[in-house]
Image 1: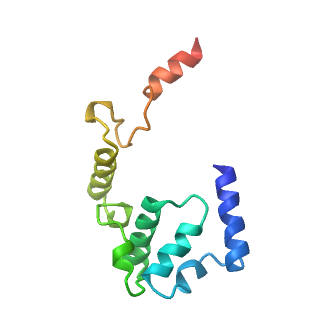
Image 2 (image 1 turned 90 degrees about the vertical axis):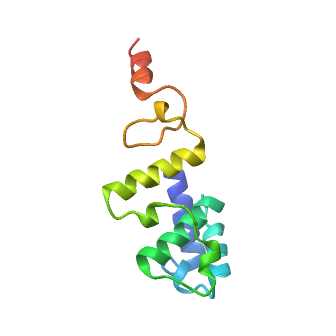
Length: 124
């Protein structure tokens, strides 16, 4: 994760003079906004859509045409309470195809053994 954060920071310094806000503030339109975000290290299609939705819904960043690049499912951009956070987590589980009986409370699992089984195995 540290390498990913460093790569992102280096890209912001190199391409935007260290001003992360320039990524969206200087975007000409929604297409340009999505392209700028996608060029950042670690941002694939899904993260681009989620970030465009967050920028629009939480910060009012809405260049012309932003809608076609924003997530059209319930994301963290729509979270404003515990209930909507639970809904966002359920949507994420559904998108991943995670079975409810395998999900950890309050968190979408990443696969493999549940944490308690992993910890028990490490102790032996």
